[in-house]
Length: 595
Image 1 (cartoon, rainbow, N blue to C red):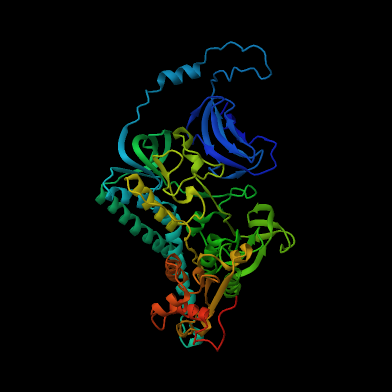
Image 2 (image 1 turned 90 degrees about the horizontal axis):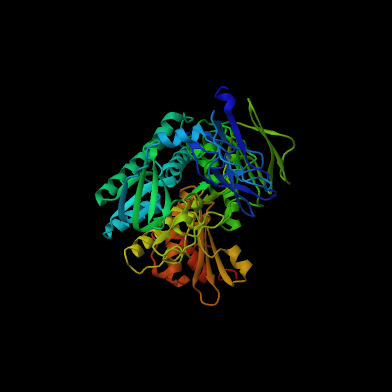
């Protein structure tokens, strides 16, 4: 029997659950030898978890799913090459009765005799950090500064995690480039004309990669300077004081014993089971590789990540459709700010389909054909050259064998923590995406410092009430604190001051008069409760509003005590505060802002 004839597909069983099925944990990788009844992976449903086991002895040829992927009954998840010599399968009788006697297995005997004794080298440290993203490396560096002997485990070849390697930084590099290109094109009606841009996609990729390389090299240098030992690979708990790291590039394993630990293992993109495996169907990581510039692109999911990548590909020449299951795009900011963004971005999209789902996907040589269901869906199948699936992320808590350390992990992969970032196991902390929403790098960084300082014996807390959100689209949207939509739903009485940038000299000069700055003040105390900005540089300005909320500022504090430079876009924050008091001289005469 040939090798091909011995290959068998392992399928997701019918678990009798109509809800979502996802891969909770993967226990094998290509090349591993397994026996019959060995668990290969764990499937999670709304009701329970189920081990998918090997049906015979053999070798793993391919694992076709990743942890967190959504799957359906009957889907192939593993390809297994059956061994020529089989040991007995589980001797438990299927329907009762006596256990049959065991028989000799040449396969099992040879494997046991030829396998060398497993010896895993071990090191020890005061603090182990699992995950080298913004949260992880910040925690490791802060701990080292406080005198702790620190080991940092990172799965990527370079420090920085998803954010720096395949997320925040490369996406912002591309957004900056295409923003400059679109700004140059818009100068024509101001009397400055440029030739049509010529995009060298290879040099564009090289610029992005160079930006990432420069930052990762800086992190590596800072780790060396602080004496932080870095292990590249994937860590998993063996017990409450030991982690085994599967080193990158098949370099073996390393055992690390620790006194304390910070888990900063992040999250991964969710995958829709309806979408087949095809090189033209990518997640955000695949989209950032810029494999090609499609003529027509479908963005599945109208959140921030999907819309940022839509901005990049649109500027490079792609026509974009967006399908979103919810009734509106971009959850988070108030709808009046999102409407301004939509008005400025209508030219990018052929279709925006809220309240719509994908009903069918057919892959053909000429493209990926998609059918839709919903009030905004087109008839028949629509052809696309590329599909970006951006339907959210799932925390990686189920990938760490955390139960072996006694750490409680939810079915959603989230690890619960207290205000000191401690898990239910006191000497193990968790930070960043893995502790739940919002999944933002700046949240992880703040939590990292708290966790590291607590691990060093300091008494500090994390306050997650003022975490700004930013969409780095064109224009940007940023928000922090209480939103007007939430205030209405919760019955909180607020005064709302909206300052239009059409009354800002700097915004007009910068061709950004479509923007707006919005502040919310409590009617009873006059304290600032929240604020948001839509317009150029919104993310750079939102920090002032966050600081004003934290300091319990009133409109008078913002408008009179702070001398905002003129002319600037940041000046609109002070103007909105004046508007709240009814003292704004940059708008026609009016009373205090509407209640």
